[in-house]
Length: 154
Image (cartoon, rainbow, N blue to C red; front, side, top):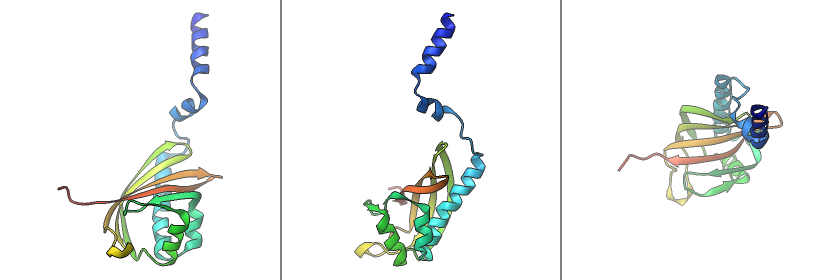
């Protein structure tokens, strides 16, 4: 009886969110990785082709991005940059997907970008990008992205 009481106490003590996070993701992880990698590529492809409507459909309403300049930008700024054709060309490689829980995952990848940035000329050509994808209404939306310039080690 004491063991049953202790087990019941611990079960009630651990919050439901903590129990849910420890459960393995329900979706097949390789399928999830393929799906989210394709979506991260689609974001770039839509920027390159200036398809603002398709790009907007991939982004959450509260999307934010830290560009390689280190500044935080809102969704409207990314859509405006796409409309202007900021991304001329890109190469996407070395993608890795890390599920956080059943409704979120991080996709990291390397990017070779051909795009201008500000008044100083070109954006860093080689970047490491991290995308935070969240499930909203049964579909995956990009909520946050950060691009970090890659540089040789000093």
